[in-house]
Image 1: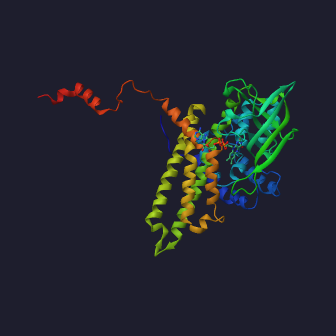
Image 2: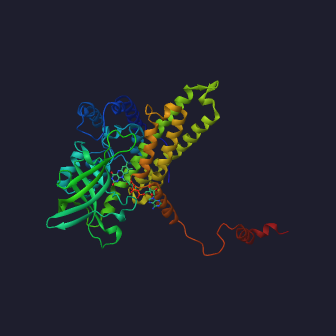
Image 3: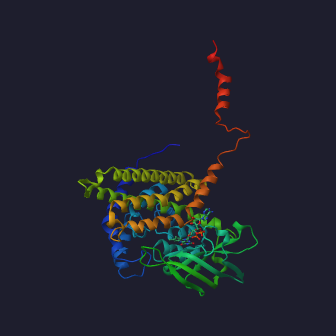
Amino acid sequence: MSWEFMTDPEFQKEIDWIDEFVREEVEPLEYVLGSPVDLKQPHFDELVRPLQAQVKARGLWACHLGPELGGKGYGQVKLALMNEQFGRTRFGPLVFGAQAPDTGNSEILAHYGTPEQKERYLQPLLDNRIVSCFSMTEPQGGADPTQFRTTAVADGDEWVINGEKWFSSNAKFASFFITMAVTDKEAPPHRRMSMFIVPAETAGIEIVHNLGFHGESDPSHAYMRYNDVRVPRQNMLGEQGQAFVVAQTRLGGGRMHHAMRTVAQAQKCFDLMCERALSRTTKGSGLADKQLVQQMISDTWIQLRQFRLLVLETAWLIDHHNDYLKVRKNISAVKATMPKVLHDVASAALQVHGALGISTDMPFTDLIINSYHVGLADGPTEVHKITVARQVLREYRGGDEIFPSGYRPHLREKALARYGFLHEG
Ligand SMILES: Cc1cc2nc3c(=O)[nH]c(=O)nc-3n(C[C@H](O)[C@H](O)[C@H](O)COP(=O)(O)OP(=O)(O)OC[C@H]3O[C@@H](n4cnc5c(N)ncnc54)[C@H](O)[C@@H]3O)c2cc1C
């Protein structure tokens, strides 16, 4: 396998354009607008739409999609390089048509939607005329989906959905939900559930409470109830019992895009830390001259470079295999590494900024909280570490003997049997 560290010079021009455009035009939006997915907020059309139009005109809109859906089909490596730029700011993904969970939901609809569903939900989603919600986690069990209890029961031409969902992000802004529900309690655990499109206007959808976390101005992670929610039969996505397969369509890409944006956020913290270290003086010398500060800089620089390489290698492998499942181990490794990298770089940057660093006048506390967000959403770190270990162990087999294959006395014996003549005479 070859490996190429150079960005194609033509594409580098696009990256340079994104870099400047994001810093100059997109980043300021986060100080004057609310949630990026609140499409109806005052001044949204006036401030965001012209920027989206520039991205479209440049041919950089919704690049996660293949050409058949109006995207460029760039692949994950180029996406990673783009996300590294626009992921530094809250409005970046939205301005580039790459906002989660809409990206993943559009992948599901593209794969499993009927032509009518694509017209009604996919096209407006791709145009960012609407936003969507992925409604899977339940209050009694997130990391273990086999504990989900929400049911969908067939009744004539309809499915009737009942149950509770938890942390359904963006539910209050969404025009439709992609909802996971048990359709056959007796089936094996991974064949019990199916996936549905649920239009937001359907009777019986109740938002019990919107949870928020520190730093979020507008709580939008819904605790939801589905009370006899009726959807047409054809709103099932994929086959009955295929919810896990359908969910995988979105999760691989979703986890990678989070990681790419995490590189951007960690890099932003790192840049601010270096600037501060070079600007501040204490006890007769600059912070940058103190060895313990230098250690924070070198440790986090190394950590961030290692993570970025892991992300890029995994992106390259996805492009190479064109199949998320074949690269499952690597995607889980990225997912499990991401929270610690963001946490450590943001914490070091906070520390070097002193009291200012912990204040809300700087972004570090938000990004430390975000490190926990990326460590939970799309599955907790521990579960991904288990996946990595299981997948790695499949590449090995245990020995049949009492002593391991690296046992030196046996290796020496074997070597002597082969080369013992060297010592003769
Ligand atoms: C900001 C945010 C947005 C989210 N958005 C969505 C969304 O839009 N849609 C959606 O469906 N869900 C969403 N989620 C939910 C997310 O997918 C779940 O939080 C996640 O799957 C973990 O489930 P849980 O919170 O119930 O934790 P639990 O399952 O209760 O696990 C708690 C902790 O136990 C440990 N743990 C769990 N399993 C294991 C194991 N097998 N081995 C060892 N340790 C383990 C981990 O430390 C874990 O954090 C979101 C979460 C957050 C934080």
